[in-house]
Structures are given as C-alpha cells and as structure tokens.
Image (cartoon, rainbow, N blue to C red; front, side):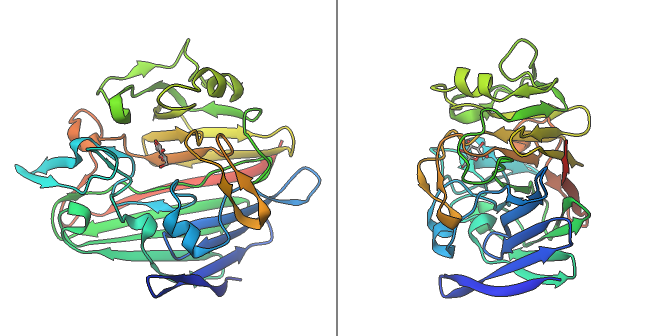
Length: 336
Ligand code: BGC
C-alpha cells in the first residue's frame, strides 16, 4: 500500500513523502523533484538494505548540489552555449554551468514541487512547465510514474507540449549496492551494454564523435571492478566516470556488490546512459546519520545523448506538437 506523509516545506509549499512496499522491495519518494529518497532491497541474508543515497530534510534537497535521487528535466545533461534552434528560431536558455546549461537550468524539474497520485504499487508525479520556463519553448506537461513490479522499480516518463520543443528526462539516483552510507563504490562490479561513448571537450560537452571504449578505463563491455576507472580517472575533468555511453545491447548496465550479494540491472527504451560515479560529491551529511563523499554512489542516468539538439547526427530530443514523449527505465534487483 502507498503511505503518504508530510516530509517538509519549501517556498511555502508542502513536500510529501510517499512510501511503496510490494513485499519484495520498498521505495520512498518525495514530491520535491519527483525524487527517489530510498530503495530497500534484500541482501543475501534477507536483510533489507537501502541502496540509494538521500537526505533527511526537504531543505537539503533544495539547497545541496548533486541532484540526489531527482527526476531531472526539462533536459537532462548539458546544452552547449545554453542555446538551440527549432524551426529556424533560436531559443536562449538559462545557463547554470559556465556558459552551458546543466540538468534543465537554474530551477529545473529537480527543484520543483510536483503533483502526485498513487495506486497500491505506484506513484505518478506530474508537472506543468510554462512557455519560456528556463528558456524552453511551449507549455509542457510531463509525468513520471514509478511502479514496483516484483523486485523491479520501473519508471515511465511521458511529456507533451503545445509548441515544438525538446525533452530529455532522467532520474539521478545514486546507487550503492553495499548500502547507502557504506563509503566508496570502488569494489563494486559494473557491466555496460555499450561498446562506444561520446567523447567530450571542455565543459563535458560532446565533440560529436563516437569513440570505442576498448583499451580505455571505460571498457565495461565485460564485468569489471570500478576501481581501475575511478583511480585512473581521478584528477581528470571527470573525477572518475562521468561519460555518456552509446547503448548497443540490453541490459544497459549491471552493477554488483560482493559484500551484500545484491545485483542491479538497468534496462531502458533510451539510447544513452550517462554513468556518473559521483566524483564531485563533496563531503556532506546524508540521511539516517550517513556521511557521503567522493565516489560514494553511481548514477545510471538513462537519457538522450548530451547536447543532442546541437548534434544533428545524434538521436533527436525534439517533440513536435501532437507527439508524445514516452520512455521507460527499469532497475531490477536480485541476489547473485
Ligand atoms: C553530470 C555531472 C554532474 C552531476 C551532478 C551528472 O549527471 O554528468 O557532471 O556533476 O550530474 O550535478
């Protein structure tokens, strides 16, 4: 059953905590940012382990950086120069990372209060974003439904708009399969359904090329510990992995912790996966007394490729009037 409680308040608006439990897994969400606040799954001894980072208060979600657990939009990842053109008209967006826009702008969907409705094993968050919000064209309606199906958390995204626009929604959960608050993820094992990635120039903006991952620290085409990538890419501009992978097979990603026996597999309708190993997660208090820091979680952000709107050879993030954006992502858990 869904249980709903008041979690806090931001900008004089209530923030609700919604808890779902289907007897296999338990998830907590907050209406600020349509955020996954906790995800409890059984370890090999049957103890429930919370595998997602989160905070105790609504204020921390509002003021801290890092987008922990949030639904990110209207456009996840970066748009170079904070501008793009559709139908020959240029749109200027709010820049919030140097000259570029990251994760939907200054106050993107991650920082807004969403409406919601529940069924027994699901919650649907919805939001209306007015024409010109953060610079984007059109009145956009978007929704994200989170459902528990056996040991799977499934997310269904939808959106439509009254002007031709772009949409790219993702979830920014930080997973740690040894338990949130257990420290760095170096020993966890990752496999990706990808053979190439989109290399970047300054500002983590794609050059437009595709490069093979073979013979690089990013080669997770076979299961590999995260340690080598995190160590060898520390001190670089990505402080570990902060790269978009070009998905070529399913599952998009598999993550495993030998400590707990928990395996996560991620499947999606989308073509890109930004893997972010929290290289910029500065030391901070997390929920339930946890302390978080660099490399304490891994985000598996299913999405269109970064800056796709300014790279015509990338799959298009445009939705036209009358079209519906519909994408899905599943995070499934089992014991290995
Ligand atoms: C980006 C990172 C960024 C992080 C938190 C990720 O999706 O790729 O560069 O630091 O989000 O903002």
